[in-house]
Amino acid sequence: MKELLSDRINNLAVSQTLAMAAKARELQSQGKDVIGLSLGEPDFNTPDFVKEAAIKAIQDNYNSYTPVDGYVELKKAIINKFERDNKLNYNLSQIVVSTGAKQSLSNIAAALINPGDEVILPCPYWVSYRDIIKLNGGVPIEVKTNISSDFKISGEDLEKNITSKTKMLWFSSPCNPSGSVYSKSELKEISDVLLRHPEIYVVSDEIYEHINFSGGHSSIAAFDGMYDRTITVNGVSKAFAMTGWRIGYIGGPKWVARACNKMQGQVTSGANCIAQRAVITALQENPSKIHYMVDEFKERRDLILGLLDQINGFTCNKPEGAFYVFPDVSHYFGKTIDGTTINNASDMSMFLLEKALVATVTGDAFGDPNCIRISYAASQEQLIEAVSRIKNILN
Ligand code: PMP
Ligand code: GLU
Image (cartoon, rainbow, N blue to C red; front, top):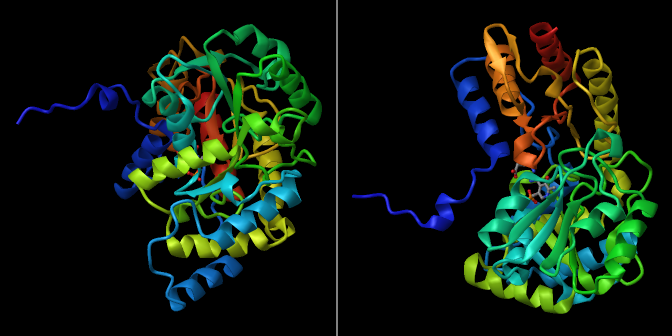
């Protein structure tokens, strides 16, 4: 039988974070001692108080289909969380719970993008934005940044890329992969530009909100004039170490929430019942309860920055959030090391996997061909060993 895949799927790139993680697992299963720093996944266990809520939910027979947009109790917990942490006031009709923030993002794209609509993506951006946008007929407009601007765009950068076709701005702060955090004044500059273009919507991905070492998180939806045109995306994968539980959510305009609900109603139905019950407990807790993880991430950030500093030609910004470093490795392009010529970031990432047994992700996946992403969601011993292997092979 001929393989007759659709153009849509043929044009869709494979998620390179997941592909690299799969490659690392494959090598590990062959007995190779690969250190996996490719996947953005906390290496902590889900906190006990959350696990206990899930066990109780099973015992209490939460086993039926859930409301498509989430249990009312969970939506209320999300409303309280938005009030508590972000000074954003939503009502029940403005919240949609999904099977991970990835589905939240996909719903938004399906709900808002018409073919040919332009979506401004500050680079580097999280790996799946570009393909989610393209899958829905949108045109990603990549706005380049570099270390000297801490991988952030200015109001001027944004303004220069706005056209009559611009539909949305998508970004994450703290950013995956650069770890950059937009300050209040930087967000104000961006929102001032957007105020002059009232037809542009914003998708603000705040999934790393709590993994922030800069001393404060700001939500762009809370700035003057932004509430009605911003969809704030969040989830529990990162802050609560719940990647496999698959719960994400949005707060935004009622008409967007209604559209996401409609989309989800045809595609997946409501998110998992047990996971939703557990997330009610997670969100009701004071965020200080998960600070032990944030403190550890900060220690690891400092550790890995210090270690990478000893490697010739790896130049880093100082990430203020998330759990990634994004070194510029372009110093090595065109050089031959140990018989292998490194022409780009993908070559470097492959070289490190094959020769140093350290899994990273090429910056191409995030729209920056000069960098590689290293996740430091691994133990300090693993980080020390990984950087020492990289250093030995490169220096
Ligand atoms: N946004 C960003 C910036 C991410 O890093 C991730 C990580 N997977 C997601 C969204 C999706 O998260 P989830 O596990 O909730 O689907
Ligand atoms: N967000 C994580 C990452 O960037 C998980 C992988 C994924 O969902 O693509 O590595």
